[in-house]
Amino acid sequence: MIPLLGGRLARYFGLRFLGAVLGVFFSLFVLVALLDYIELMRRAADAPNASALLVAKASFFRVPQVTERIMSFCVLIGAMACYLSLSRRLELVVARSAGMSAWQFLMPSVVLAFLLGVVATTIYNPISATLQERSKIIEAEIFNQAPAGQRIEGAAFWVRQRTAEGQAIINAKTSRNQGSELGTVTVFTFNTAGQYLERIDAGRAVLGSGVWHLSDVRIYAPGNPPVTQANYTLKTNLTPEQVRESFATPETVPFWQLPQYIQLADSAGLVAAGYRLQYQKLLARPFLLAAMVFLAAAVSLRFFRFGGVQKMVLSGVGAGFLLYVFSKVTEDFSKAQLMHPAAAAWLPVLMAGLVGCVTLLYQEDG
Image (cartoon, rainbow, N blue to C red; front, side, top):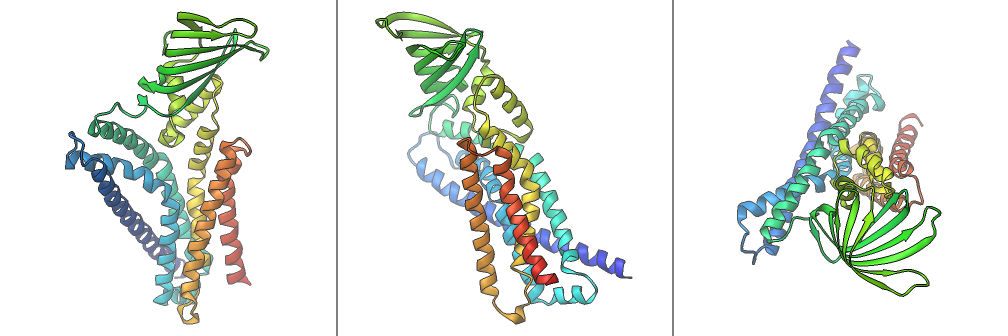
């Protein structure tokens, strides 16, 4: 009788939690889509190629990546709403009187949150990354520009390569065709021992088969006068895929392709810290969502008749905000190569889980 009752109550609590989380998520999805559509319509007011349908598609395709970033807060708010509602209706009292502890009626929510994290990492993330790229193409069509990633102005890009002759650091102010054509290029070359050789300025660089074809070249070597050449060939071991990946932001790379990006970046001598951090964050996401359930339960299992509901809600929101700030700090340390990407991704998960579990242990077990 008790196991059967526990199973029914567990399914009931799990469904209530799932409904609350999905309700929060889809509400924020619609809100973000509406705000983004209004902003994009304002920007495209004078664009000749803009239409309401095209703007709506571009806006809709961008929303999944935005909502993916706030998924942990959807679980936090949804769990708080679920348990506050159960407490207000005294359903938690009934569960306790039936012999269930707080840990028992939390487990269905923890398992569901973990499964939601798995789905978000393995399915939702690749979809959101693909839609984000399509959104860039549609947005470029609206504003009559080259697609993002094929033409980027007003920024500086860096690529490092290694060959049998030594190393070279390439800087470019503009990029076309996903990095295979560079403009306003500066190349610093070094020998195999790491000693500086020369600086090469070029108006344009085009990636060929095993070489960079530079035009409008001026070479500066220590102890020698500058040399001007119409064309210059610089050997490289970079492929178009590797160059493209050096310009791709980690957030736009689908989960299943991140290991390949990391491997190619390492083989090309490029910095892969951003890709490693993104990969570890996606691996940690199921555990982060499960930890958010414990954090939400720590501030929402108090009975309504004891009062202090407003303080509980504010404390839960505050804890979520502090966790967000902490995760951003660790990410910045990782991107600056001051912290290992795995530590930066998993420390917020451990902190949220420990705070939630310790608080629940104190509340439930004294």
